[in-house]
Image (tube, rainbow, N blue to C red; front, side):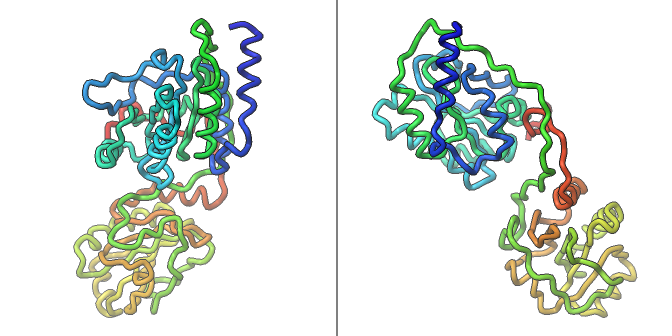
Amino acid sequence: MSLLLTCAIVALSSLTPKEWLDPRLDTVDREAIEEMISFSIPSFDEDVEWVLQENEEPPVWESFRGKVLVIQTWSNQSASGRVAPFASQKIIDSLEQNEDVALITLHTPQGANKAKQFIQKRKLVVPTAIDRSGETCNHYGVHYDPVTIVVDRNGAVRHVGLRTRGLSKAIQSLLAEEYDPVLEIDKFIPKSKQTEIAAEYPIFSSNFGKATNVQGKKAPSFFVEKLISEPLDVENKVRVVEFWATWCPPCRKSIPHLNKLAAHFGDKVSFVGVSGESVDKVTAFQKKNPMNYGVAIDSSKKMQGEISCRAIPLAMVISSDNTVRWQGNPSLLTESIIDHVVRADSGETETVDRGRWKLNKTRKN
């Protein structure tokens, strides 16, 4: 490609108006994705799983030359992610020259095990690649936030991270440009740099129990009628609060697991099991079933009531700012989940290469 043409593409790509950009996009993601601007769109990794219509073949980038291509990343695990592919399709359908626009969606590893079910249920008919390993998402620089990438008729990435109105404007501006069939666009080669980012809280559980999902929201005010264990410090620290009862088989089964977690984290995390039964009943139970963490009584079930808890056992992992970071059956609570909360709560940082998905080339779920 000539120097003149290269400069022309770079100049055009730098003109994405600020009002077109989605301000919600993570800064680390935006910086990584914007590296692709003016270069050819990278191919998806061979391990992606394509969800296509009957007799439809996986797309080949060359087949989109002469058209404006929109790549929408998304996940079924967030409200913004679930809306994203349909919103992009709606914008394209509203355009007069929509026959010259193509849409492909890329599902991130988050919730990949439920992606096909969601696609079928919601009748998403555009070609969709499910990236279970994270290889393609890392190459593109995308993470949790849904991202729109717009490629011009010549195959060059021109605009990224757009809001809804911005996407419409971007497509229309590129449709007005001419297609040059002999123009060759330089291949994108990611910069090999590392980034220091804040440790992240764990992904919310999709199995949050028979209760109001309060993940990411303020936790119920901590209240118990009586502590029947050693004094417990729950102020300004990470804590695990579990609702349980002596008569409940799954609750009894989870006790050894909670004992191990409590022993592992020591003073870093406060564990407390809250029962609505009498002191005598719980104390008698403990004589045969050691509970090596905080145990409390609350016959009013005040905290349970605040989240409309209708089934036990149920656990919440709460950060020091009193926000619920994870909610679900305690049998599903792992050291890794709690460790994520502890590290993020303490403000730790970590150094990452381009892309923030931990690659898992063997994951099939």
